[in-house]
Image (cartoon, rainbow, N blue to C red):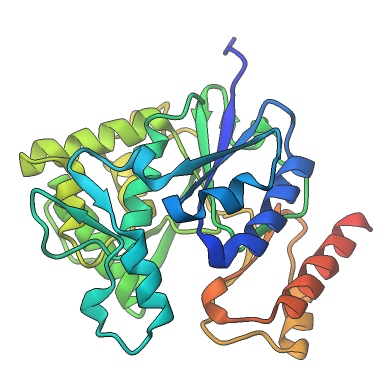
Length: 310
């Protein structure tokens, strides 16, 4: 028999996503039991706004709480960059590694480092990583992600092909960081989804492996990469170095009905997206980068929720 398992939901966010985050958090409260806590990591300047949510199951953390040693958050400069879009991309600076200041960390890389760091320190058996633009529409019990002591691994074989050039680049980066000889292949597994679950033990092993290969800190090594995916890194490590038991709970579904296109959903496209919802999915996800209007997103969530209720 395995002991009672625990999970925590982890979300990186910031003030422009506050409305979306509140919608996600409310769905977490409805979809999980009282033992599940929701952890959000935000820039220091946004702490007051997120703590004002006042939820008994929400823990609001500053980026500084999980930044590895030697890193300093520069969220003020990142906020300035957002207000002045005409600035050159090199000013996109969200944190600095004092031991190696150049290149500075872009927000995308910083969020990934924060998620990896937090996953090693939260007191739980499974970390469920969910971004602010996701909404849970069905119950999400602990048993969804832990089976016989093994944490669920989303792994979709053969999904990363040559036409997904960024995914292929992220996969190669993972191989290099983990010291795995690169052998070109027409396809690789995909590990990226709207909901991704991590085993903290596997995360620790993964970060230790990076340090053994690079003979440097894992965070400093990752920070020097311009192209990186934390989800592909984790999945690649689990695939090549995980134990048979750790890999015993693998499934090819993300459990999340996602819209990944960078273009906004219109009314007709939104209706088609809702109609395509699979009843096995626990959540709906409209990528924030699509710039879909809040009204359309609300209609999508309501439409999927209506299908779930039938």
